[in-house]
Figure 1 (tube, rainbow, N blue to C red):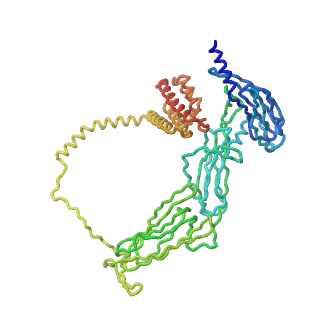
Figure 2 (cartoon, rainbow, N blue to C red):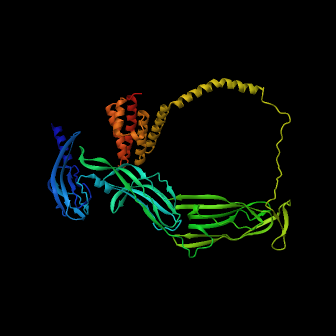
Figure 3 (cartoon, rainbow, N blue to C red):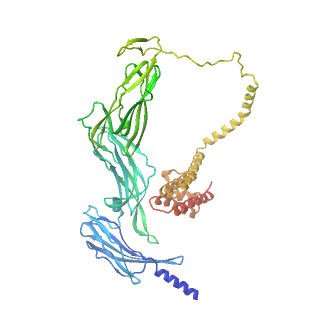
Length: 588
């Protein structure tokens, strides 16, 4: 009896010092003046002296309606008590629902004020529990353009973001229309490590995800349009119904969102101050001309390089040409491209490499080369010049047909080789063959290879028969492929433990491929109801079927719901156990 009294005292003390939660929850934070709002004041204790706010700016249409629930789970008591009002706004603007007050055990508790944005009247007002309004206000697709008034060939960035309010979630989306970049040079930027981030939209807190990034270079002037990105989004919104623990049930609503067309006005490059050597380079560049050697013998070759590095339209411009005396034979250049493109545009270098062959001795001067570009940040042209390069060539080219001495600048005589002269080089290596040849036919090695081939032939035919039988088994091959993919994605999910989004994506793919393997389903057919029916037809027990469907739903919901590493590990182990149970129960 004494021990029982201790237990009762401990339980009463635990209830007395339990944490008190007293909250205010509005059904929406943005309504029209001709619509209704539901607000619920909820406490987890049996509080006294509940005093509602005065609802300045609102008219109480209904309420208060009181609700009380209490439960015992594993010897632990929990209760919930709430007061609900339906309000009608009297004016537009930002209205504040002040604090409600209640007392418990002699202490006073207050709710947090709720700010409601009231807009003008709408043609079709909705009720306080209509979720279509909250869907419209909670999902936004935005195309952010870095510069809507660029110069011709100036890089601009386009970033597509989807904003989701904190009261809703997204389970997936389908792309209905892709953006089109006519009259632009474009490149999509690969963004594989997409992470949900916190931000603001129109001054309100939102979560957002970067869906796509692209860098564009306009190729004509005037007004250009970027076609919109349009998505069909599956949105989870809360309803007015709650589960046993007081958490709101959610429903999935399909919503079409579009980023809208974006208009870009492209300016032409200034005509005033444009150098003659300008060939379309736009950006910020360095220019360099060099040779790999300055002294060589006649008939030898050197490499002359013309290089431009920096950031700008490197892949869309022309390099200046190498100018050399006619007595130097210059071959067509080889282009070396070391350019990378990120969200800020092209960066790196491009180089033209010329092979130059002097045909006779003497001194040669390669004149300076001029390169011009337009810098859009500074809005002016820049011109850079290389230095003169002196080549010292020793000796004369071999005298042969087609070589004629002519007078050059100064008193020296030079040989010029005509372009149609042909040269044959002397071979310096020989390959000798044995006069007495041996033949492979009728040797011991010949008969050994022939006999071995005859012995191996039956094994080869048997192996080919098995391979053809396996290849003709279309259903079996599909099942084996799906099993491999399931194991692959399950192992990938294990590696991604701790990475919330990647883990649930790979776990969901593993479950889908398992269904393809065992039930011969296609991805488009994978509704939860059909999966449950097919598992039942194959002999899976009700408990296993229910756990499998719950695991699929958990993967869809968890992608946009924070979860701990412990819960991810629990879902992974649960997936392995459920797949093993299904393997044991369904028909083979």
